Length: 71
Image (cartoon, rainbow, N blue to C red):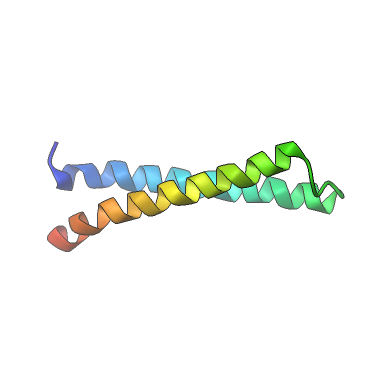
């Protein structure tokens, strides 16, 4: 598959990661609003957000050469 054809796949994956991050942060905010501020589950949510942010940065890095060549 050519790099230009991979762009929609990377774009969709980046969109999915942004949605996952938004959902996890919304869940953490709701928990904080209800008074739940520290637990193993919430720590895991924070760790998942960190992993998704790293994945998102990697996807954006991979999209950069494609954008330069096609733009």
